[in-house]
Image (cartoon, rainbow, N blue to C red; front, top):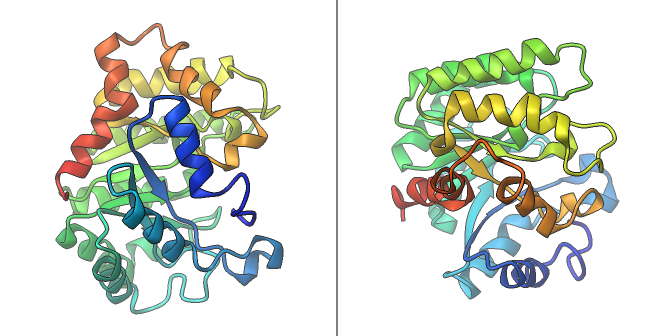
Length: 270
């Protein structure tokens, strides 16, 4: 976040973890370059989070940003080498990759395939911020590299108000056929209008329940979207969406979503 001394700081995150009895957090980096505007610039986010992980190795795990859409190297040649260099520099278990709204075709090019093959070779989790237009490419990568865990951000960003929602949710659910695809939930403020209509009953019914039925709790991972979500809901409310508003899950299934699934994925590398 562009205000690291206040709501976007690691110290604020640790305070939220302590107050809500959250033992550990996977921190998803976002290197927001100059193309997003000077007020959002966050080029050093990898270094900032890496320093925090060194101070708090028992509480934080880093997913480094590699070649995201705000950076000039985005979807250019040499991506696999940059991923390997980043993995070596930070000793990461996961990386994140942000793309634009529309599929530019890069994921299934030779460079894209080499990029994800390097991730599989390194034993990394690929945490992808993609919209539904990328689901076909994600499915291709998942089938090509079945040993690569792919984690989709924010319930796949299947927006309820979109005219393509029914097609989008159907295509998202079809990704469950690839056992290495996982989905981060809720992120419902991205899917709903208004974005602060807690507890997002339509998203729970039309998105979370189908995901639960199709993927199963063992392939869903709770995410807070801290600190961005603070404009829409509190950290406690984000927790409560899964803890208190999922009567279709058993306590054991809820425990999977709230940590056991991610812990299992990280254990492959740590």
